[in-house]
Length: 466
Image 1 (tube, rainbow, N blue to C red):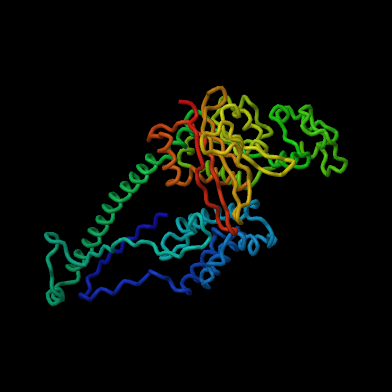
Image 2 (image 1 turned 135 degrees about the horizontal axis):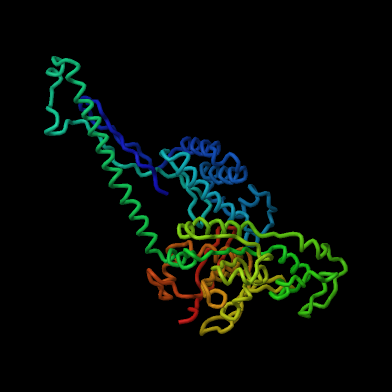
């Protein structure tokens, strides 16, 4: 976060005194941190975000009380979001989703509502323990001495003998000099800052990817997962194929428990709780998918592009032929992924009978597994995600796929291109340049231990095409 620029200008000359010692901001006191927390919670930014305010209060209070070691995803879910003590943090992403929103809300508060506070609160990514930090103040600009060649140096005794009318021009002159100095500083600093920021954006690997997706003159459609479809598949214990999804034939059954012509599940279920017309009338998606859509829409590269979010159920193939497309979710949650199955080596799918997500590695290289299943090893939950960048429908435009074996896996794919260091290292491996991002698919693994924030690393990757 960029702190505000504060320039202090002293106009009236004062007798020379020793400069006061700088205040030690290395460790703010508990009272200072509590006061800052209170100000943030009472601000307009958090006025209508009760749950985010509770989230912030919980982690900050624990930190101020010296109980930072007790802060983890599991405890936040229990104390802030009223989850059961036995809930699985790796399967329930509410804490991770809300943590992203909380970080964004804190940035908005300190950038727009309180840009001059001495202290700030940040929540580092990969942790839920807040940091109370001081802004880096710029050197104080003090014009206490007359400028040579502009006004003579006058001793106090000589000044007392002069009429008041002769003293005022010197003070006004100093005001003018101070104002000109401030304008020069802003004229130099602000353009330099903007140039540095644009230079950084132009050189980042992520920016190359975003520029390829959000091209001027070609609209972009973001398609989140269909969670009503997921519920349907959970109840029927069978997947829905893309052709059934597009035609809606999977909903034409009098009993959803009886599969369609796919013949993948012929067992009827007499106690199915919801009728087919219920699924036809309801459209759902996860907050994690919507947060990703918002995050993508706020990218600098997306500002000049025509971006829309479309429900998977109402999308049509013709919509994809004239647009770049971003698909979120695995094949079971977003059947549109099936359009790209023949181009992908890593196929993210779900075993509905065994309630288990997995990634099929169609052509495993040496040292790679043929299948990667969600599992728990030594108390650590392992989930998988796939980020794929490839040509669009009929090789027109571009497509970006965020897939996962579950919520944690999809989030790992969602976070990957936003992690500058990790993604830049990956981009070098696949031969990306500052102007070109080759097509690729990356298999990611995320682990979560003891309810703490998951860690993500690249297991393997393939370049798509030349």
